[in-house]
Amino acid sequence: MSTKSKVASLVVSAALVATVPAWAHHSFSIFDAEQTKTFTGVVTRVNPDANHLQIFFAPMNAERKNVERNAEGKPVVWAVEMAGSAQSAKDGISVNAFPPGTIFSVSLHPLRNGDPAGARAGALYKCPEKTPPAAGKNCDTVTGSLTIGGDVPVPAATTN
Amino acid sequence: MFLDLAKALGGSSLSIWVQSHLWVTPLLQSVHIVMIGVVFVAILMITLRVLGKVGADETFATVWNRFSPWMWGGIGVMALTGLVLGIGEPVREASALSFWLKMSLIAIGIVSALAFGRTLRPLAYVGDAQFSGGAKFVAAGTVVLWLFIIFLGRAIAYDVEVWGSLHLG
Amino acid sequence: MDLPGIVQLIHDSALSEWLRSSLKAMPIVEAIHVMTAATVFGTILVVDLRLLGWPSTQRSFSRLHGELMRWTWGAFVISVITGVLLFVVNSVTYYGNTAFRLKMLALLFAGVNMFVFERVTGRDAAAWDKGPTPSSARVAGALSLTIWVSVLFIARWIGFTKGYDFSIPDNVNLDLNFGQ
Image (cartoon, rainbow over the protein chains, first blue to last red):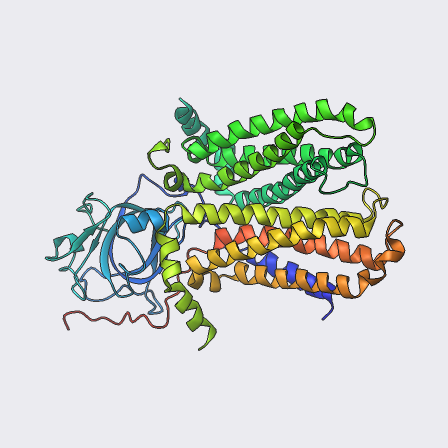
């Protein structure tokens, strides 16, 4: 491959990347502060981004027996975004504090564009290991759960 | 007051256009960063010539005439891209101490560049201009000033982390 | 150990952990990365424009090249150090990011282009030190300019695409069946 055609292929690849939705870096106006959704979910991954830490999780079903799945049987995944990794670490939110499998509850203001992510609203409630809340309840009702990053309660009206 | 103004600006149609077209911000930021390279190196080249570190085989006027249009042109493009970026997220900018410090330092930088050009240009045509120790000190200071401006630009995204309770939000 | 394993090891390192939890470290590292990247790009731009003969070819190429390259390399070294720190702080995310991989590829192209110029195209630079540049040198300048502008654009794109990877890592088990 000549240098020229290498550059051409690079430009084409760059154009392909440009079609990826770009809303990971922003002010918080892309979130709808009028709406609040509350989830209890299972952590799949933490992205300790210096600007905005994100926790990815699979929301649990209403019975709190398993995670929600879509029509193809794949787990649904949501993301909750908050302050940068250092600010969040001061609140006790980090990769180590939320390993995969952690069950927790959180409220969030969802993205205006309908994608499954939102800005954290209030505290995170971490259930004791492998101990989900009762059907329809959140981690704040579980004995031994931890309140992390403030004391704003999870709203009573839960969305799942 | 500025925050209220920023909130009103954030609801304007131009602001909402920037916010809802997700390619606008990265594109403008990229142009802004390319221009940082153009402006900063133009200033660096002029300064290094004053210090006698580069281009000693050329007159100062030649170096000034080559690089100052790039500096002013770049500053113009950055003002434009910066303005639209600011309109896209006015509350974030207005509540960041880094933003206000950056604007103040840019004002100082532009005024000093204007003064610099005005006082040194005639001198340069005399031939091989010799710069006083004071002029060299100021020129080196200008480079440091623009480095601070670059730092503050990046620090807007980390205003709470950098300034703590001095953050204006 | 495979590459993802090494990336995970970097992610779990004490340095990574420290950078993640320090309030001031990342803003400073990122700002220095921007300053030095701008210096690398700007100084290369001056050389590229001289190769393209814009605005003129009056200045001695070897002198201009010699004077600027030490600034380019000095800034480049600091840029690489801060860039490595940026990778270390969130290595798993960057490793999986397409824009990040493209940027590394673009940097590789920039290096190859520079190497070819230094070793082949620029070898007879003394012959055109003050005159019009041969077309091969102009091509090298145009390529370099294009590649470095691409590097800056792709680099900025990383910041907008590195979040929101909804994929579930292989080692995460979501077949829970609590209370059954």
